[in-house]
Length: 330
Image (cartoon, rainbow, N blue to C red; front, side, top):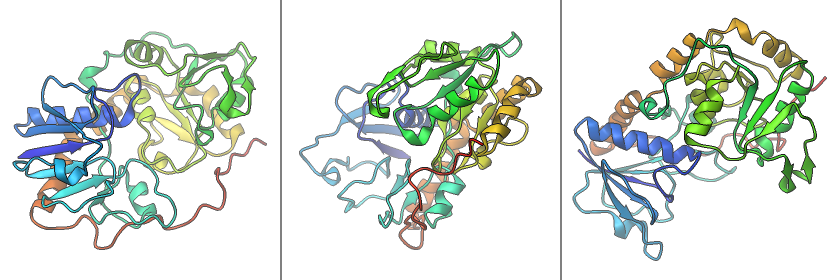
């Protein structure tokens, strides 16, 4: 099968690069499975296992689809979807209320799909061979937060609050800085909190590999949560809020979720009861690029046989009452 993967970004991932990392893993695995993969991506991209074509932003996407491809896999919704090729559109984020999505939309978790009136989803997977092999035996120290701390929905403030209330524990913030203008001139004085900015590659792997667990008290419906599966791969249990995909991704063997800070603090204090080997194997078995590629191949075959991913256009089913979901600090 000749597959075109399209994204308005540069590959491979620079530092964190969540979506870029997913489509890289997908294309690589599809190529290994005998398919012919081409990326249509932004200038500056390169790839050693597949062909790369640069997007011309002065032309409609429909005019840039190679004639010899069998199926097109968009990772954003183009303004112009009048193409004469079978296609799917992976929706990686939450849609705006009343935004009408394409009938060939595919979501990244079951919860993500259901909230948009769909049943079409594929869990993200990663190429774990591109990560360092974790040390699952040596003692761990500190906890970590992983995500864009500038986004209030990621609730780094809540993660910091929890660690401040636990004696002898420290938090490494991966994806944030100590002095943050965008958070209302926030300056974090506490020496219990260390900031590393946007990290990737060996530095990120090293920090996750020595962490006791991921603290992830998000205040939105998380579509999937790559930070979760990356942390689990390195043997880190997850302590999170019960929003979006989190109850679907995190089971009782690998983490705990609640929107009550006191409950999460109690669970964090007992992080030693979680087995790093179980966390690692859970991520390895359930969220790998091979499993993801097989699921997407099923979707490609459906559109090749003129089936739609959804019988009607998906759209967000309920308008959130609040910008931030509940976070109980009492």
